[in-house]
Amino acid sequence: MAVFRVERNNTEPPTLADYIQGILSRKTTIPTKAWKEEYTKLTAERKTLNQRYLALKEEVKEAEKIRKSVYSILRQEQREQQPRRVQDMER
Image 1 (cartoon, rainbow, N blue to C red):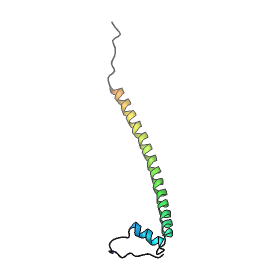
Image 2: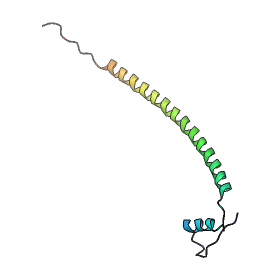
Image 3: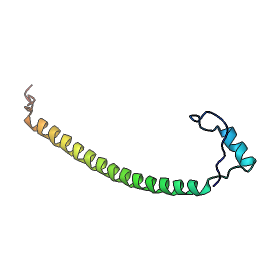
Image 4: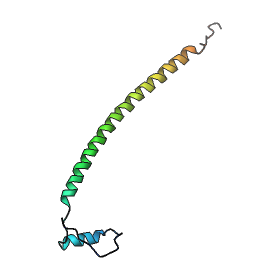
């Protein structure tokens, strides 16, 4: 792959306009091989991250069920410990 060089400061990367001008004047080529490699790498990374996300989503769902069960049990125990009010049936 031919890479074009524009006379400029070595610290400055070429601008998009310079890059496109290089492609149009056939001084450089579009790096399709590198793009395909990057696409493959990013696709694999996305699949891995998606699997981790789904696993974590299931863990959160299980933790929510446990939390709700614990709160339900605590509410039930509180109700049992509260003194019951006996209404006077006599009038």
